[in-house]
Image 1 (cartoon, rainbow, N blue to C red):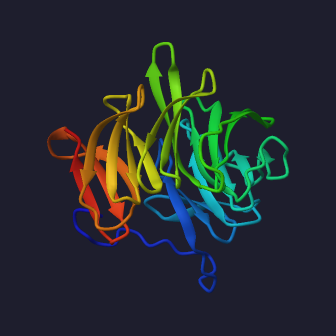
Image 2 (cartoon, rainbow, N blue to C red; image 1 turned 180 degrees about the horizontal axis):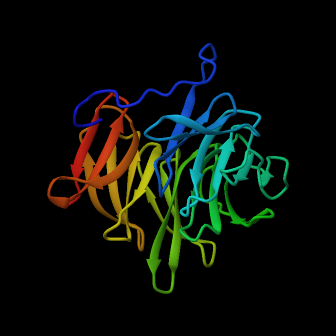
Length: 276
């Protein structure tokens, strides 16, 4: 709790003698549900504020690196270090389908490390630990790989992906950021690279803005945050102040209804930034 600085809820596993290290967490887009992925290959769903376990998903065979709900909250995608992508109905412990590293068109060597889903829930962009990016069509019966996007250096992890709705003729783009320092903007209508921007070190996190809708902010191990216009790759603003690599960013509402950025650094601090 950022106001009172007290522990609001402690989550306990059914077997207290088994320790699970969670890799990430995601909130449900429409309700008080928390999704977590573990190094032990399990995915957990908790109901809040009770903290009760709603579901344990256990079809992965290696550490679950990333996961996300679709915008409707009715489906979820998870990816693991063996390169497997799983599509779920969160009400069931049985996957709807899987894509694995042995599937010819999917094959993300090094594992799945980032996932983003478009607002319609029909398309996912999936990033790999070795520089691969795949566009996957989401259907109930199967996942279909429709394109590989080649822009990041081989062997460099694609750490973060966001969708940005531009409207107009281009409409929707995907933005990928990697440890090669590149930020690639992809036109999903043509599946071509629209713009490329750069940090001097690894890109660790990307967040899209509500307003203006064409703006994104990227966080980097070069200690900076940069805000860009994805329509043409123009740098709009740069924030510096961290003393260590920036691990994650988010966007929120501050005093007076102003939009603020929140960044978490390797030095153990979180900073709040005015976007205006």
